[in-house]
Length: 107
View 1 (cartoon, helix red, strand yellow):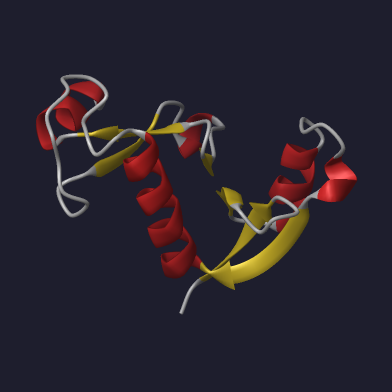
View 2: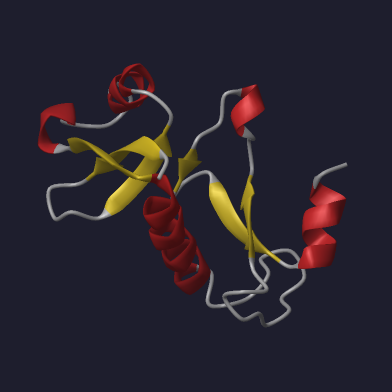
């Protein structure tokens, strides 16, 4: 079971998933009133699943690029700015894409 650090608001809503406490702390510097957020260590697979469901529902179960309707299992959670370039798995950075639009976005 792999662990990761998550940032949650005071209601417990998942906002971001990070690989280290340092990254989570740095991310909070950009949030208003950072003292109102929680940093928690959690099972990574569960946290990613929770974020995927949120992104999928927020994007109305459709690819944001072409509008194709998708099931949750067909959905690709695309990071607009990938983690290798300093992006994070977060509500703000992720979007729902279909298989083909995800392939196009990778190039």
